[in-house]
Amino acid sequence: MAVKVIIPTPLRPYAGKQDSVEMEAGNVREALKGLTTRFGELKKHLYSDDGRLRSFVNVYVNDEDIRYLEKEETQLRDGDIVSIVPSIAGGTGK
Amino acid sequence: MASKIKSPNSPETGNPSAALSKEEITRYSRHLIMPEVGMDGQLKLKQAKVLCIGTGGLGAPLGLYLAAAGVGRIGLVDFDKVDLSNLQRQILFDTNDIGRPKIEAATNRLRNLNPDIQIDNFETRLTSENALDILKDYDIVVDGTDNFPTRYLVNDACVILGKPNVYGSIFRFEGQITIFGYPGGPCYRCLYPEPPPPGLVPSCAEGGVLGVLPGIVGAIQAAETLKLIIGKGEPLVGRLLLFDALAMRFRELKLRKNPECPVCGGHPTITKLIDYEEFCGIRGEESASPAQAVVPEISPRELKARLDRGDDLFILDVREPHEFQICNLGGHLIPLGELSRRVNELDSSREIVAHCRSGKRSAEAVEFLRSAGFRKVLNLKGGILAWSDEVDASVPKY
Image (cartoon, rainbow over all chains, first blue to last red; front, side):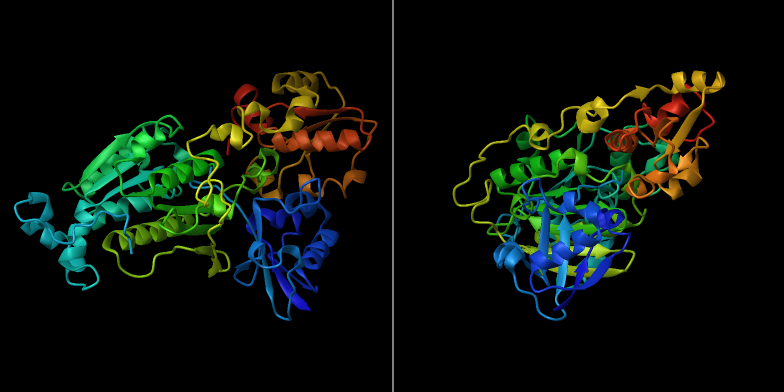
């Protein structure tokens, strides 16, 4: 399935400074795998050492949190938008 | 809607605060002539009590708009002083305020804007010890802080006290806005159960913020706060609003209440405030980066002495090109993110001193280079900031 993965600002430096990446993927796991294969440095920002998605990084398919779908097994359809939404804490821009 | 918010639906006669003076009617006339606000809404605003945590980038537009709108009682919490570098975005302050406590400058500004309202000052850092006491008197809390421990503290305190928390956070040119702690709605921990470990928080390389961004995000927080008070419209509950100023695009994601949430779920395990510094893995600035503690270092003065002596040292600058343009020590520039694939530009037989702005990124670089077989690599302690302080004051700090 042709999907678009949106890279959030804090992770763009580890993804070749791109704000989104188009790719073929059947589910969320494959999409993220494709991303970390292309950008090796992203891996430690998305996954903990035991290979689990980090708890301060949420992944959405369109506007739905994958934790409430089939998690990383969530199927993707053509044209789906996968968003990576990490927590940011800034308030004053220090 | 807005059941937690005290709203004077039927203003009592004889209560002077429940009526508007002639001057107030003129001041708020553009509210009064709108049916969505009207006299009822304006009186609700007058009786409302809102606590703004932080008076910086987000707190500035927030405080200004809430005061201008006639929110009767506004609490301000901040412990910082106004710095020259704040003025690019913190529009509550002006050049004459530099060095003044923010709380003092902010109070002064808001009193001048609207002398009819009450401003409460809390010149303190919000802590687990004082948070419940400070928050308890207010109807709505607005989070304009800038760090994870305080974000979790504000969230938990709001859930415990049953107060809505109008949340906004920013990063560079991107913002996130939502309302947590609304009856039946999710809380911050439903969205993010845990904070990122300090090492993975984007470093100073990726910091910074477009000056107007907190203005936009803070103004959205103000709009949501006013809506909660007057009980009109659709509050930003269960929806996470993402704003990207660079693309100039708003997106909205669904935000669900986590039934297993340790604070607001059915069987909460956190029922009182905890140690949030510990929860976020922060114990003092020094230990923030594990890499920093173990890599060999050189102080700015030692480096200066060795350079003056004519020692053969290779200066490696691991900052970003735009930072190099601000100031540099004449080093060879390889941004940290490019180091692994550009490592062949370095000669492992020479002694290398790596530096960045504050010493954190270069500590990572030193650790990486040592693991890649480089024997003689040192980290410039305190980075270019320390160099400016200790060796050459003509180098600007940023």
